[in-house]
Image (cartoon, rainbow, N blue to C red; front, side, top):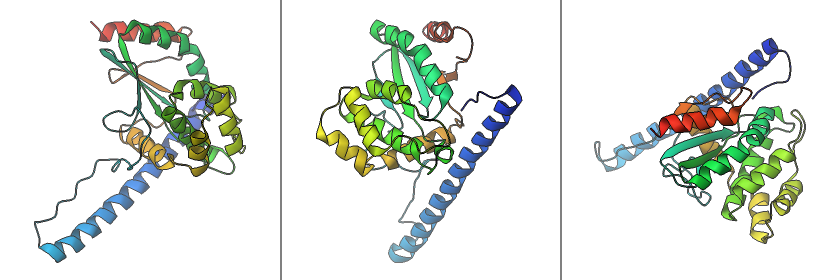
Length: 249
């Protein structure tokens, strides 16, 4: 999250969001570990100690239903295939994410068409508490996941940023999220059903928790082969291209 306020205020807001995201992740992590431990104890008592083993990743297990085109760990959506991997973490309520999406759109398209990169999108919900009622970040990211099932994720993401609501407001309604799908070229009734049902809400939580466990707690974040790239300068496209070129050597 980036603010349009003074630098000092923006830094304070970023610190607040980072702490909020990591605190929320730690609470969920503690709950999951406690529940797993309880299940293991009960199971061991029933079938004999040493016969039950519980395993869980830092962010817990991926939900049973995930959108089309996810990565192997189910924590991102893959577009294109190339030697260098670009990871993009965005929150649809984050103003700076909108700016980054616009600034990098043409460069990402060129890189994808060249066949040199694998682009992975991670739609996260760090700013849920910055809408009223809370939860818009999850609803928007979940709708974007529904768009992935229709083969329109990137088009839908662009529309969401075009229609980005102001922070502290209610965000786009479900009807507006469905209408945004039509603007992105989605006409199937299955998309509307997916949005209204909140089908991918659990997946968005999982993606956000994986990001937090990897110390990504602010957006936007752009990574090239696991290294963060600063795209806040005057020519973010050049910064990205340079990082891709260096990674491909």
